[in-house]
Image (cartoon, rainbow, N blue to C red; front, side, top):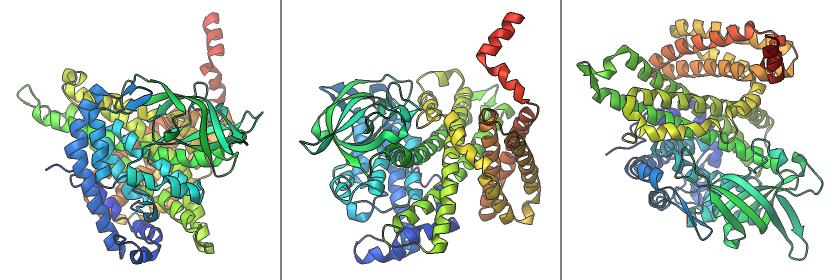
Amino acid sequence: MDNFYTDTPDFKFHLEDPLVKKIVSLKERNFNESESFDFAPLNHDDAIDTYEKILEIVGEICADIIASNAEGVDLEGPHLVNNEVIYAEGTNADYKALYDAGLIGMALPRKYGGLNFPLLPYVMAAEMVARADAGFANIWGLQDCAETIYEFGSEEQKEKYLPRFNRDGATAAMVLTEPDAGSDLQSVKLKATFDENENIWKLNGVKRFITNGDADISLVLARSEEGTIDARGLSMFIYDRNSRAVQVRHLEKKLGIKGSPTCELVFKDAPAELVGKERFGLIKYVMALMNSARLGVGAQSVGIADAAYREALKYAEDRAQFGKVIVRFPAVYEMITNMRVRVDALRALLYETTRFVDMQKVYEDLMKERSLEKEERLEMKAFAKLSNVFTPLIKLVASEACNSIAYDSLQIHGGTGFMKDFPIERIYRDARITSIYEGTTQLQAVAAIKGVTTGIFLDQIKKYDLEVSDKNCEIRTKLHKMTEAYESISSRVIDLDNNELLDFHSRRLVEMAGNIVMGYLLVLSGQREERFLKSAKLFVNLANSENRERYEYINSFEPSDLNLYKLAEFEELEEQV
């Protein structure tokens, strides 16, 4: 029987990372909950055993049910009946399987019906679900909204909403985007007004491109402060679908992830509850929610990339041309090997980032119960800095790589890949959205460039370097040269003190840093398990060539060259010619 957990030994490997022991101990409050909850772990080994058993269940459901339903869901899709979104038949079966297994609200505390999992096993489950069906991953993955309610909601709100996820299988949605406020969320206009007679907030306006928009519980970004036009006038609200005060105007017709409904919503005096404090909607609550979403898209991207790689390998091993299977041709086995190597690198970065976020969150949660010691506060601050730049980094590099891997996988399939005869046609379409939603690649570069300008990436690279053993000196020497080139070229751009130029080169600089980080992570993985050393060597060779190209481009670029890219100046030059 296929199982998406047991056929991927990388999951178990990343669960055994040394930092996980500390994460689990903090998450489980030194395993004190075993006195109050029957299924709480007694110690670290017990916790890891629980994670593995649950992930095996997820892996089985993904292989036997979700992956099997994916093609049918893609063809049927959701539809709108009497102002209600009806999922495809396969989507309902997928969600029921995970609900019956108790896998809705995995990361929530046990007191609210959750499993109290750290993010690490939850993100692993998300990767497997995305490998099975990227569209369905959106529906299941929006349980992240429960985490936001837990982090920032009142105790009354937690008691009211959080048990519904595990108990009732409640679905969720992030209701942020508007027709005139896509990436620019500070321009949100949906109005929130407080009705003093009814003692309740009411929402009025339109939201667009809302994933799973007809969900049971929605987090809505709205303008609560009259006369404001920026982020300081925005607050976050909980909207409960049971009030039936929102019209689903229509469902979008999409290129990919067709099983996931994308809605346009009209709010008409929709009753809502304020989350936390007014004015903190975007600058605090949505930023936290978006960081979780970026990590989720990172996991989704790695799952899609893995699915595309496996489809390419399977096809190339079966397809014969010119008297031999095509996997034996250098042009093909180079592509497939590079896919595998990149998946290894992306997965290493994904779970490193997840561990950073886990460390930040367990300390923040602990602060609700007691004051942190000085050492704990410093550690939380350090991991928060890493999380803030590694989260957009994984979203950027994983989404772009999954598109590239899906492209190459379809190429290996040849003409048949362009037809609906093989899953790669759906996988290819599903991949495209990952570099667009939850912040485009271009916005991720702007967010992650702080890791370049503040030296956070470079400091972390140097920490990794201290852990590399002498037996890997050949790869280490290449990484040293890559780091020197990255340090010198980033300093050159920063020293020019030109923000427009920095933005222009931000993606190149961030990707250079990401390649070095992934190279080191693979080497360090190889020191724990030798099988990763092959991937480390091949990836560093690839990354080195990519970074040299970026270096040469930036190094030969003059600040005045920016004008050549501006359309007005470009048109003037054409007229002169």
